[in-house]
Amino acid sequence: MNRVISSACRGAVEMLPLCISVIPWGILAGSMAVQSGLSFWQSVGMSALVFAGAAQLVALGLSMAGASLFTLLLSVFVITSQHIIYGLTLREFVAGLRARQRLPIGFLLTDELFALSEAKRERARLTPAWLIGAGLTFYLCWNIFSLLGIVMASSLPDLDKYHLDYSIVATFITLIVPMIKNISTLAGVAVSLILSMILSYCQLGSAIIVAGLCGMLTSLIISSALKEQ
Image 1 (cartoon, rainbow, N blue to C red):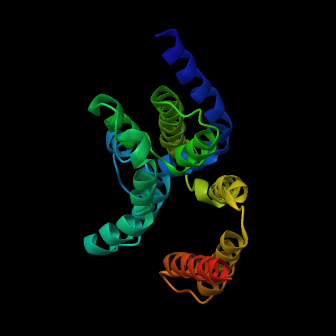
Image 2: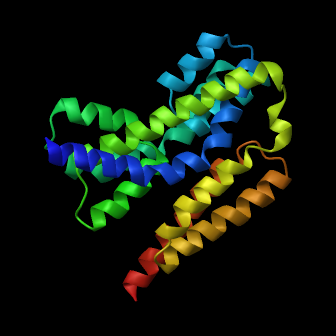
């Protein structure tokens, strides 16, 4: 039991730096929820049940823009589809776990937790307790910061003008850079970055999705070519 608690505490401590970086992100999500017309408890429930920062921001933005339900659902599905890859990557590790461990890990699995778990798995130090400890810490922090944004929305409206969404960029840079370990990955990231800027400048609605798919295709082609050589 002591070993389990110790592992969970280590996971919580290692997740704290990413929890700090997501403070403005959570505040922005909470503020947008109120501005989109959700009640206090609806806003709290969205962060507690959905627990997907990028998906929440996109869903709220589309809702405020008057998008259809189909557009909203399709956009959220595409944005969160990387979790399928995360689950398949961790499948070998979690396959032997009991449902009481698999279910919380699946619910708490985020981009941040996956990135940290991959580094941990490479050192053969990944444990269910570590995953739950790290994921639960991020979950609690996300909801606290979202609640802060919900409360602040009434006294400081239009928090988006403070450009808190820059924290999204900073967070993903922190996650992506350490994962660039070969030429194919670097090329994919570069293509995604350049295309996302160009397509966004051209005001293409699906700029991020197209850029991401092109980046993955580039990585696949270069990786295959290098293996052939």
